[in-house]
Length: 365
Image 1 (tube, rainbow, N blue to C red):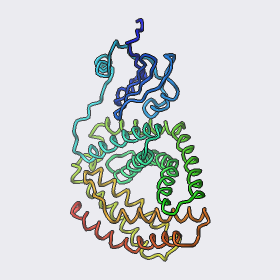
Image 2 (tube, rainbow, N blue to C red; image 1 turned 180 degrees about the vertical axis):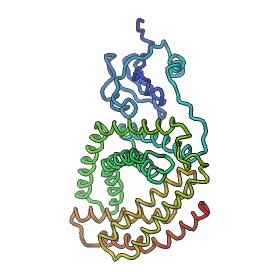
Image 3 (cartoon, helix red, strand yellow; image 1 turned 45 degrees about the vertical axis):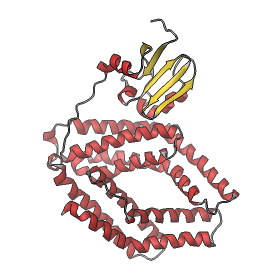
Image 4 (cartoon, rainbow, N blue to C red; image 1 turned 90 degrees about the horizontal axis):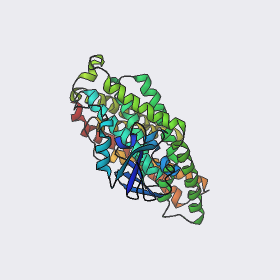
């Protein structure tokens, strides 16, 4: 077909990974355009191939498959593209399923999609995008831990959780630096701003390296395989707990996660101030996140609670003290204020936990 100035050439992988996920890449009148749910992204360039910068943006979807011409339309848009290529998009049947596995698997599927969307936003430099990536990764790890009994494949779940932990660790400095730089605003000066600017640059290198790595693509592929295997496995092979109604099974598993949080809170209360207690509170924070995500997956979306706020404030205060030491600010009102903030959080933690546990009790009683 001869190309005219009003034609748009659309590019995708052979399996139409972009179109399946609501994205399109097209070239029209000397301009490349990526259409996303959040709006278009435009690039200048020639028609000799998809620009590497554009191809890198959609890596979470293409997984390094080549972007090749899939359609050429005259004055055609996305709707026409779907009409032309729709027969090549085979969407697996996913009927509503209120079984324990069905409910958790829907949540897993949502978080896999959220991870890819946050990847695209991170590569575009959107505010809070790295945080959204970390949250999606933590949610997946949380439900794999809480609901392995209904998902099955515990060995595979552990392996994927390990890769998700690696990804979270690579993204953590970018998010932590962002939070701490904002926290430092009341006392920041030229030296501290330069310090956080350097940390930000170093963290951004870690993010780019992680997202461009082979391990990251392997993680995304493993998540896809896991979702497909769990969805396609014949129901007769599921464990009994997986086949039962979610409302009968998931609250009991949430209770197990909540009991773990309670034990960790009790341990904190028995420890004196110091590094060991700081680590114990951090363990409570991680367990509390697992509880939060287990509740979300079960359909019991928790409201913000003092307990969560205390753990977040404690973590920010402890990390702030580390930055103050690096800046050689070991004494004075700023350092003392962070020490006092952490101490207040620890003191209030047992009472806040009792309140949250009381609010959650109706779920499993």
